Length: 368
Image 1: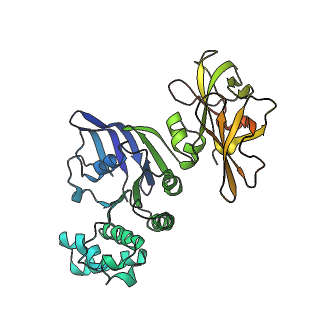
Image 2: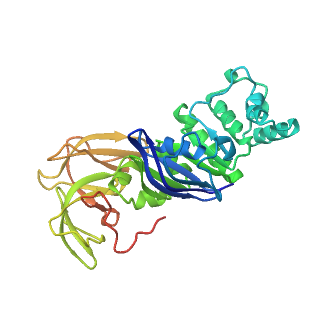
Image 3: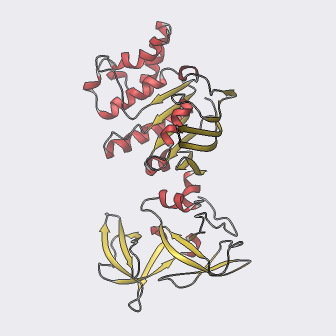
């Protein structure tokens, strides 16, 4: 195991600045997930840690050693890629042993490490098979085993489940989680899938346009997003956003008005914000209650999705084209064409300023 420290890391390809002043500390044994939309720089950041790309500026340390100039083979990292990249003419055993043989590891050590890794990944009965005789999940485990057999200090995963179908992704997520618990290794994992991030990570790093938006546990990011971007990216269905205005503020919180809502008293600290200022109100679908509209104002139900144990109700405001989503238990009494009023839970409402940063709470909400 080893820690990883990134200090003001930058990466540019010519005039294109990809990674911008990233500061990050990854502790020994942590499972850290880089998540963000396509093009945010998450895979580039992983390749900088691996040594597959050079750092334009900043300092990268693994353990207590600065590794900016070290080649990949000397950094003590193992990497699992999106593509399995297995040699088709080699058996599972030979694929897993290949890197060790290239490093001129003693034959007895090669055999011991491959067999130990095979036991951990439950590949013992597949060692004589070739990749074409394996399922997608088995091939991915072989790719993981090839990296693990080298006994790296850090395991890096670059979207390893993207090529698998939905049910196999769930299975492999569970296997990777159990693997981390068993080995206690430092793992850094890249994905665009926020479900993978939420289910696997000890700590999530949300990236946006090459910058770190927020770092925290899955619970912290879900319950206390620091920016509107994080609030919209983490969580499925996504958070609902409504334009709002600041009506007033005092020592206990603030009062906010929004189209289609009664005035809300919220526990946010509006210091530095002026009366009448435009804000954005955010509320997650599960924290939104619906009541029958008393007049033609409010929101029209345009679709109801039945998902077995729950229902998604899609709402269209009288003005604007942004649909809102309410998540509730099935069955539901709501149907397409009805007009409803919204009753958000004030304890779960988020407010964002014109800079898209969340207004802080007067008293911090507990994180489960």
